[in-house]
Image (cartoon, rainbow over all chains, first blue to last red; front, side, top):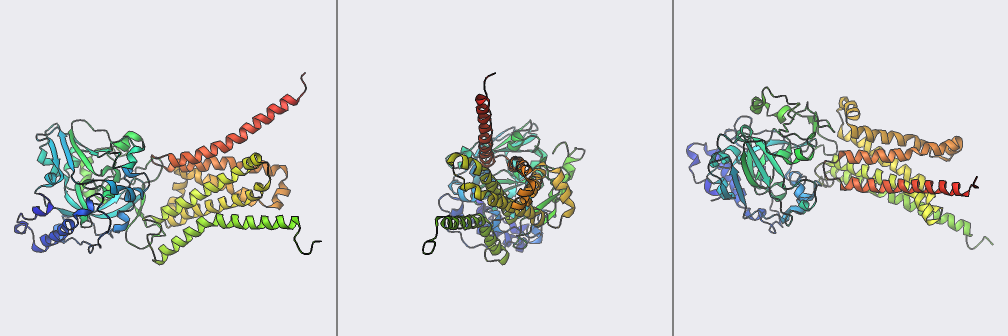
Length: 322
Length: 222
């Protein structure tokens, strides 16, 4: 079953008509372009759909921003995806070799229903939602991206995590055949990330399969990736093949590489600098104006999502647990 | 006798002028390409000409060319020693000044295009970020070298001119360290520049040791 079928559930009963029509339009856009995600079929890019404007009722309070979104061209050509090279434009050139169909995700660890599921199974019965989130990279730039996907919690719950599941660990595919960057030892492959269980279950934590109403391009982490908008971008792991519930804090890639520079939590925090650069401000990459002069804006605590997430960290020294 | 055909001296002078003109043109190519792309971005003809983050691209490109030209400047002496010809020296000042030119554009891009408007953070950025401190120090080191690069200053400073211009070695080390420090994990590119600089410095060191040995051997045994 794919996302289209999810719409057969009579959502109209509970959702205003303009909202589900809006959703249907988004999902139709997604479904009309299945070939985009399949390696070798990504030659001609179809014209862009009109910029998706979410209906107010669809957007829960604080779940989408009305800031000017980043252009599709920028969000799909400026990527950190070291499996395809460490240059920003490497992934958009090299990631076409990634086969995203069929795609299986292994779910295991401290849960009642472990198993290997294909992507459709993972998302079965879940209504796709759009979330327009800010994305703040630890390098000091940021974007505003309309994601399409489902809340992470609703996927995780299906595997019935036990009371011992205190963390969730995620793993990216690491196939040197499809991913030329994996042949370079820039990172200890496979790429790993993790969240505390309460973070993973937070309604903002999102599992994305699309952007701008279209399927995720490979360089953006197709076919399924995490989006954790209040944390630095490297936490939002791409092309996930494994999800594991653990009792102990799982090892994470950037933290393993440079523990002093990248913490497990990696919450966006303008007051806690990276040892080598300031995190007080960021270059916003959005829209078409002021491209030759950086659109530098102040970075906000938890990337502007403090109202929703700060309570998870009350009493925690954020300078120590960076 | 000098009527119909130019004499050998005039001919070589012409050849030198042509070579210098070519060197100027080559050194300005990266700047020309960058300006053309910036023009396209600014004018809207192709706002993707410099990628999604034009400011970062301008910073990276001018920085890398400053470093390349600096290393090329440092390669002149070994080239002269290896080939036994003196002509490479005629290009040294020019290359050094172009290195300074690109480094200046690099710094200006950082201050104006990147930090533009956030002047209050400049002090913090420059002093608290070690890699930016190194970059600024490298540029400051180039300033007196660029100023004293004229014949007039060479004459005025005499022997001290050579001593002063040895600072270029420190500048090159700072510049490579500056690049190294920015990179998150893929060190291959800064490593390449570090290796080239190490080779250029090692060449000088080895020659100096060899010269000292020769001098010692030439002295009569006591």
